[in-house]
Amino acid sequence: MLHCGTALYNNLLWSNWSVDALSKMVIIGNSFKGLEERLLTRILQRNYAYVAKILKGLEEHEFPQTPRYTDIFNDTSVHWFPVHKLKQLSTDTWAFREEPDYQGCEDLEIIRNKTAPSAVDSDLL
Image 1: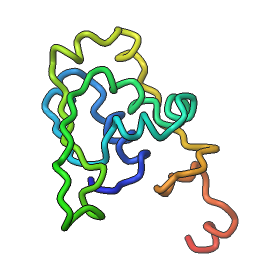
Image 2: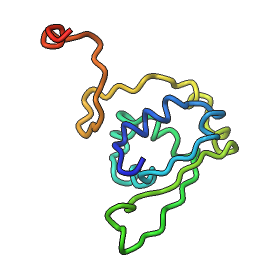
Image 3: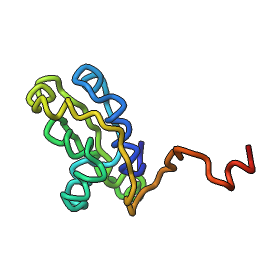
Image 4: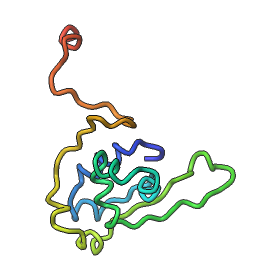
């Protein structure tokens, strides 16, 4: 998932939000620690709650930097979710299962589902 928007990582976590599912997952993509450093805490928690909640439950190993591919593999890490770390997260963390809603998210890089077709959309149906 190299260079994907944060919402895609957030959605991936949400759709696999359990100790069992996450402990079987490895993500190669943008550094979650880098996201935490670059985004304001309130933005991370409001817009990307699953990324924010999982930060203490993951292990991350940064890809080595090479001069030849700095523009491709910059900020790339391997992420995995050890069971012992996931089990240390609070029960409230796992009880939170709300579908992400990116209303008001200024840096969104995905297309949201519409709940009802607009007048323009209904002309196409």
